[in-house]
Amino acid sequence: MTQETTYPHTPFEDAQALLGGTLLVALGVVLFRHAGLGTGGTAGISFLLHYATGWPFGAIFFAINLPFYVFAQRTMGWAFTIKSFVSVGLLSLYAEFLPQLIRIDFLQPAFAAVMGGLLFGIGLLMLIRHRSSLGGLGVLAIWLQQKRGWSAGKVQMAADCAIVAAAFTIMDPFRVALSIVGAVVLNLVLTFNHRPGRYMGM
Image 1 (tube, rainbow, N blue to C red):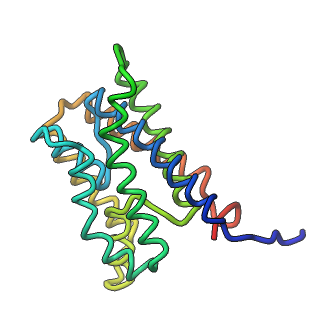
Image 2 (tube, helix red, strand yellow; image 1 turned 45 degrees about the vertical axis):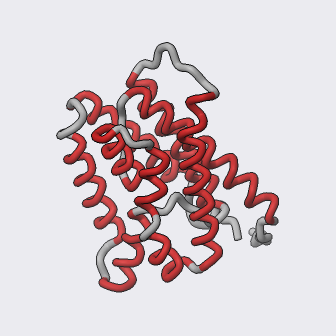
C-alpha cells in the first residue's frame, strides 16, 4: 500500500474550519440551552452557571477557559493555543448572537439531546482536524498526564462525572439523563470519525 502524502492546511482552510466548526457547536449550544440540557467539560460548567445565575453562556464560557491557555501553550504549542483561543472566542460570540437569528417554537428534548450532540461532535471534529480545540478540561487533563503521570482519560471522566453530579442540584433527573445522552452522542461522533492514521491535519 502506498503511503499517503500529507500536506499542511492553508490559512484559508484553517479559517473556514474554525468559523464553520464553532458555528456548528454554537447551534448545538442553542438547542441544549433551549431544551434546558447540559454537557461535560467547560461547556457543561458554563451551562450550570448560566442556568443558576442567568449570566450569558458565552461570557461564562470565555472566562472559564482563560486559565487553560497556559496549559495549552505548554503541552500543545503556540499554534494550537492561538487557534483554540480564536475558536473559544468565536463560540462565545456565536452562542449569544445565534438566538437573534433563529426562533424555536417547539423543540422535543430528546431530539435536542441527539441533534445537539451531533452538532457538538461534528464541530469539534472539524476543529481537531485543524489542530484547534475549545480549550477546557481536556487540555488540563493532558498536562496532568505529562507532569503527574495521571491518566488523561480518567481525569476527564472524573471531571465530567462531577459536572453531571452537580447538574442534579439545578436540573431535573430527566434533563440530566438527556444531557448524558447528548454527551454520549458527541463522543461517539469523535470515536468513529477521529482515528489515528485516517486523517489528521497539519
